[in-house]
Image (cartoon, rainbow over all chains, first blue to last red):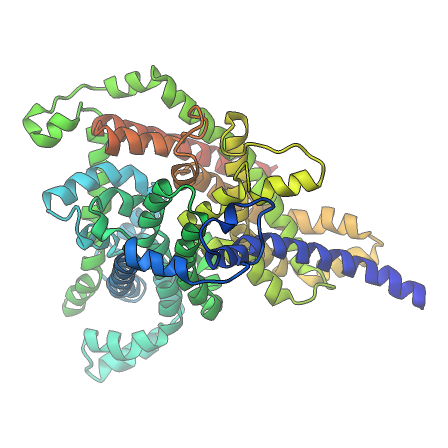
Length: 278
Length: 292
């Protein structure tokens, strides 16, 4: 009996031990980032590298807001993320619903074309997109980031997949009662689609917050920088200021990490839907 | 009729955005890649000339383009298998019957995926620091010589791969875990009744059942890894000795630093055609294998 317990306990120990080690490796850089962000300038550049601050201070955060314009970047990121998320949700949910539940000429053909173009990486479009936005006078404005992101094929796709499962009777009953299409969408579909709307909202907002290459290209004016663009630029200037950079990293990562932790279930669901997109 | 019109009102905004800000630019990219669009044309489009395939020919004669292509291939060929192997290992560990605190471990292992790439790259640049970085300190404690991670052309790309695997493996882990959970328990029971060991169960039940998902994950990951950009931008700026210049990094500098927009479009299109070719080849392989 005792021997059996040991042979059973060994794999359990191994499995959980490995998982613990793995979790330590994934979490350590994030925990350490927070620790270093509380160290006074210079402390993190000693050897061996300190794990916890000798005298924790919020000085780096004060410095970032007072002299590095961090408040401005934080505001830019919040405004751009909110705008992209709200507008693209409205457009994608409406289109996804229509592709699933409304009839119109060429519906299926258009949808197939959309799906087919998912294989084209967004970077292919970047150079002409830049010129187009330049002609529209949107380069170096919030619009340069928001406008191209107002709809996405992925977003339309996941909403359509979800809406396909909703029974038509629900809509027909409302139509017989004389409800308008807009009303049906607002008062019947949106409540039913709520789970996928939340999923898409989490996915879109995290994507918009973390986006780097396009904001880097289209926002030349440092007053408009988002947090990732500002952090990349600051880290080129302040190569030696590790404590300051870690505080900047905390401010950039913490919001997305918190959103993820709270709405994890929805995020994972979006990820699963995304993986079958092709 | 009224319903047709309503339907168009629902799809039109999204379709217009996608058409104007994605389809048109993609087609325009192909057209631009056949012109000498540069900083003079940027000022006055009258300076624009059609040059046919000259941008592509020029590209093939540019050593840095080949270097960037080689670096990107290195990143994909080493990074993707490593990343998927770790994803699979982690998914298997999470799926065993003896796993404790499954939800916690899953979240912890997944956390790097949602973090901001630029911010974690800044953290890792610090971990990689040759003088006071934690990585070299750990190597020293283990009696190993220290490495100039981001300063040595031999080590810069491996360092970036290490970072990218840390950042990305959780994504495929979740997909593979869902795949594992969807394998019917009866298959394992039948195998156990036949006296199959844990290893044989893995070899003859788990792997074949998981193969389609692994193939899918492989296709998506390869396409994603070809788009390497932010890691070298933040950690190495393409150096040292251009050992971490990726194709997209090359495109970015060509287009938005030197304003050779025609040439940059040619780079983007070449990368797209290559990714497309690799993807098509893989899908054909998968189909051929499942038919055999």
